[in-house]
Length: 133
Length: 402
Image (tube, rainbow over the protein chains, first blue to last red):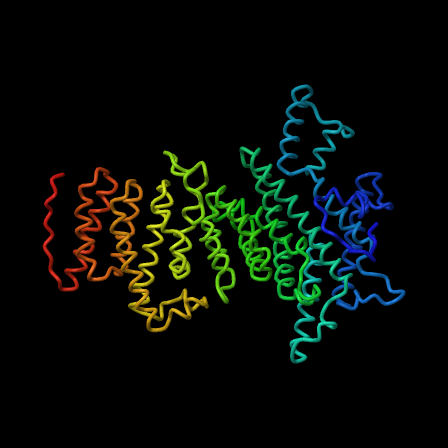
């Protein structure tokens, strides 16, 4: 994680550099539940809430948050940087809408050519369709 | 999710502005030791700005790939596009707020006001990408081009050391994209003009330094990008004629260069300048360009400057008359269009009416239809003006062409 005693946050040359020295961020926080889609959505909501709480304290306390009193936690904690990075990564890893439409149309066309019947609920195509909706 | 990031950036910017406001309310600047914020605040600004930059970078990259591959457009696509536009608008507004706040409070953010170049150049880096897609009115709105222009203008105004980088990027884009001429001219109007509009002056100098020897050929400089650069000259002359007039010496040598686009753009720019001088001669209150606050305009508003302006106008009119014999029919046509514009705006001096009419009659014998068509309009309009002013003339056509 970032050492707050040094230069703080040097601007990296690319987003991927944040997973290397001196940042050493992770794609997802340690407590990120990635078990299923519902848990994943909940984890993202928790991250958003965490950042939002920080925003609220920023608006209410202002510049005093950054005055380093002894024993007071810093506003820009490693957890907050990690949460921000995970959210940005999530935006990056979202399948682009145009690509999704193209991919879905191709899957549907391929599947319907073999089996024009109803898609099975456990199939990948069914889940793709659900995610697309 | 993007909203929380944008709110954080706006929150950090508002804290800086509030502190500045408090200092103003207290009756003046605070001592430097009290003014500079802590390292933690700087880190927070850098971190959040970089995350916002990354989000916008991802959006721009995906949009570019999508626009290259997408052939058709359906309802789903337009809905997705709307979402991207909303995301981009939200992010660009937050980035613009942060850029302006950093520019206003650089002495509070960094010791002795020496900014971290890697941080302050981030907004510009993404603004260039946003402007690349602003090809039309709708695309311009979708790309948040106005916010991007505001970001670059705020950066240029605040950080002198970034002017060279911004110039290089703008010149590169001017060569690559046709729509950038108009955007760069608008950007020159958006930057501060006190003490002088450095961006506009430097861009004119850069255009003056262009190597036109590589642009020779039938394509009119298209391959080298000069075709796209040329419109910038007359777009800027239309908006800031006084600045172009002050730096016209950098551009006039290009009248002897090979690309006809460049020559056509320069003669059109000369027309805008002559029209501007004529209008402020008729009504000095219409001098909007000098009211914008350029230093040279203030110095030129005195009595002797009026004489200089008249001399400049006479010289420019002389150039326009000579250029009616340009080797390219496109440039000759541009010259005649310029004369038509000057006639319609009634800014041709009475002393020049005879010469213009003679030139127009001479051009009625041009080998190109396009030029003859323009010449017909020029020869008609000054005559009409003269008749209205009470100076009857007799136009005799002695050409052997017809």
